[in-house]
Image (cartoon, rainbow, N blue to C red; front, top):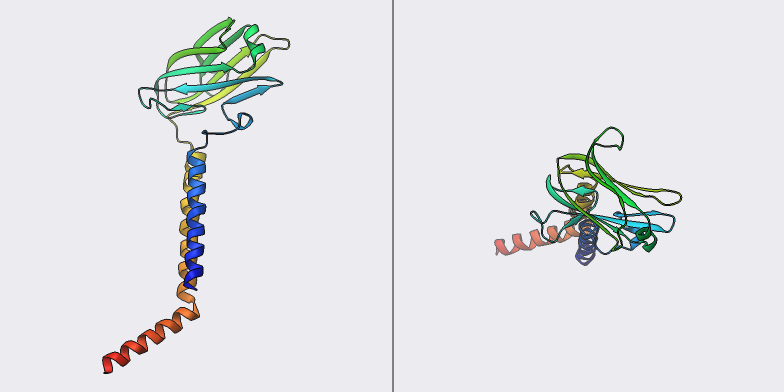
Length: 199
């Protein structure tokens, strides 16, 4: 019985660790098709990254940016065909392209090195990044940014592993307390102690 409880506890711990690590590495080593910073229209792909070296020298972000302030925005034109057509980029403060204030407007141009790089001071709240390729037909890529806002989905993903582990431990503890073997072992132990104290 004790061996089974130990085995289940180890399994619960491994499960909780796996879930927590998966949440922590959500953007790490993922396939290019599964990368949330990637946008694809047909065969044309771009990748967006935001950097805040003043806060985290090695960190890069996509849709959830942890701090308001100076932010480097980088668009990688993955598909070489995009390097041969005019590409423009706008960053709009607000949650949609029509109602917000334009804070960055890069006019359409050719980016032969495949990188659009700009810097801006982003305020707390929602922003929209729009990358437009003037091809036939025109291509329009969008990213919704959340700057210094709580990402409840990420908080939930980070918490789910430890919560499941805790619930498993509670269930195991309950089963252990209700176990007939444990009760009989405790009863025999109690009688042995009484016998020894009687001597």
